[in-house]
Image 1 (cartoon, helix red, strand yellow):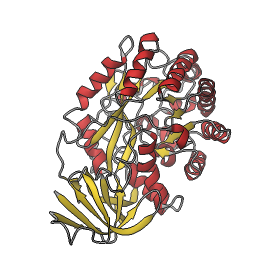
Image 2 (spheres, one colour):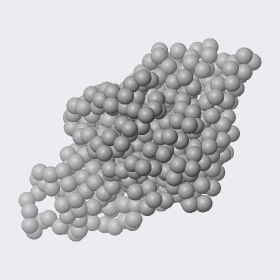
Image 3 (cartoon, one colour):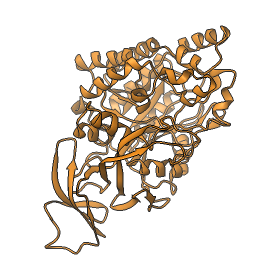
Image 4 (cartoon, helix red, strand yellow):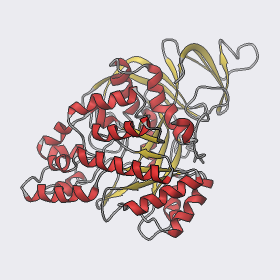
Length: 465
């Protein structure tokens, strides 16, 4: 099938220009002014007058069906990827989990089985390592060669995902040899557990205790520590879901001294705050880790995005219903499942708060939602680009259309929205995945199982520094 998109403004990380796009099958065949009319038959013409034509969003941090705190993240790979598509995201990279005592292969195979035949758009995996030992270190080499080049470790969650400094260093040494990348959840979990217990004992049981116990200084300390370990190993490191200016300062200092340090932030840290945790148990809706910070952190993070100390924005999408799941923590904030819904709202929130808000250009918006994650995680230029030969993952995006975010209208399988009632300017009219329209004017036109697994190359992080 051939599709011609006419009269749109192509927006890429490098610049913007008016041109037509010819799609032949799953890929972009030509770009120019009416490139196809004289030479080929077109099956469909899409008039994009007044609209942007941008590469589909890439959410490099999602958790579909993740077990946590005695329950599971609510979105399946089907429902979560469909919601992502409604929000203009055409690729997700989720996290396969190695359980304690398992091999990496067992964890990866389990997550592959959950996703295969269920996702509506393309997907890949990072690997969560819960056990670092001689056998799993050797497995890392195999996974890198097979297209899973990223490994997430934690300085948080003692007894569950936590790794000590020696384990983290050994994993970093392995990626220094095999070209992979260590991703770090950087909070001082041991110290947090002490303060959380003290906070609870002092009588604070509501969700605000979660935000107070997981102090920003603990995120800054852990971020510095894992950066120094990476420098010792001669390996790149990527900080996930950075939330605090204390952590950002450590990333900036490391990048200024030439270290291969990268970081993401998330919409919740740009638009939500510690205040949201303070409305009695209603604050459970906003419990995530790291926690929401005071509002005065927002501009620091936006400046990090402007200056490229933060390379991209992912969601850490990990939704739990307020009723029946978040309620597991009534009476003890330490038992509230950690995670927020967001995969459907990222692209529009960043357009509204970033581009319309005057903080970033539309080109930088495209970079942080699509091009930078493609480059960081071995998908560029197949993904994240409007270029001849790239996959035709495209958004026909209306920068002027306004919509109100609400749980009543979203497609995530969760019973609340963190952004309930917020009006945003900018929305996708048409969403295409590999040349097929999967969302058109608010209607789902794709199909379960259309998503294809993406074998990813190890990125050249020295070039990205």
